[in-house]
Length: 218
Image 1 (cartoon, rainbow, N blue to C red):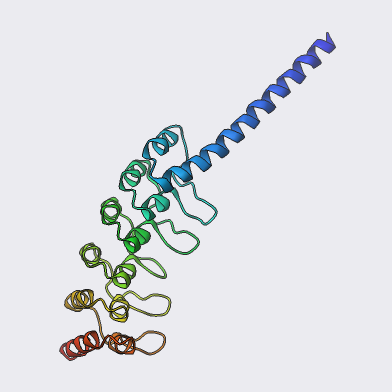
Image 2 (image 1 turned 120 degrees about the vertical axis):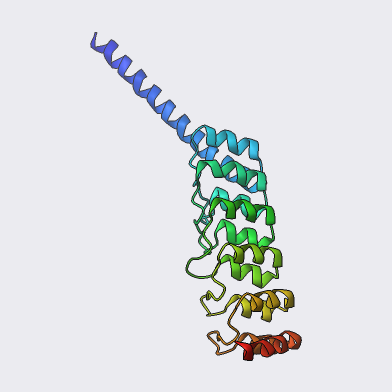
């Protein structure tokens, strides 16, 4: 009788071990599959995993969430499939980038629209989406960020504004738009340079002249 009980106990323990091991393997596979699906834009696979209970805030080793991976690669359908699961819109990876920031940086306007409509934050410590739009010269995206209330004179860690970044990189249309929206041309970065001075140092004399002409009117 005791042997029969022991045998049953061992069988039960073995069954539990097999089930637990299988679950761990399945979860590990789901984790890798989810990250790959988000990165590659495999909306069907990712949706199936989410429907089975996958955490929508799953992150990779660099802190990239599923939303960040999909947004960075411009997969609007995949981003749209994630949003009903209420992922953390303001989550930032180890580099400090959010899904909205990377969508702006890469120029994925359809993704930007989805994230803005979902309420992705525009402001936080460090670089913000508006800085990336100005840096890359993405005028239409910059307009959308300003329309949503992005702080026009927000500072990066080196005290650069969107106006300074656009001026430095030669994006004259963005500079015009920022000046027209009230950007302050008198602010200085951590090197003591204004937007006009930084533009001139980079050889963007037309932009420097434009900013200097606007400065006295403020």
